[in-house]
Image (cartoon, rainbow, N blue to C red):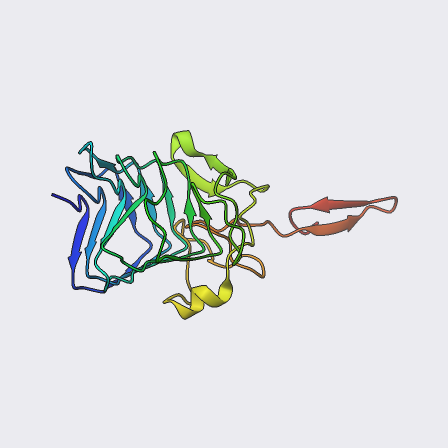
Length: 220
């Protein structure tokens, strides 16, 4: 039926630094089906999951029931396919919280955002720019999505656009957590959106007696 990767029913675990990849379900929730459940999903990637039914959706995730209040924080959800809600399908008035998250490049975004709390995120199909959000038509500039590299390019518009407060308040610990690549979750002063933190190399200023130049490490 649903939940090609995981099914939760009246359950609220914390899911940290996981990859849900190439799972398939017939009806809903190619990767994850949440029935009256409120997990916290942190620093995780949903990629190339599929719902095969031509009517239902939630290529990556389905949330169901008014008591469902899952939190998705610093997730990257991309390349997923479903008839409706390629990334996420909400049914029966759930209340998902979506923070510091990138939803982009799916067959579609979220079918219904009526009761969603979306902050500091880039959500495909949504043009909202309040509460720290970025217009969902903006390319987040992954390094190479076609080869499965969803780290951020140095010019990505989602760098430093997350919320440290939301991360720490919803199950994360910035000073010790790692991103999905195993790097420090916080590289500069403000967390990035998505599962991967852009690792800005240290810049050193070098004086050669004539001019200043930037290098990526101290001179010997």
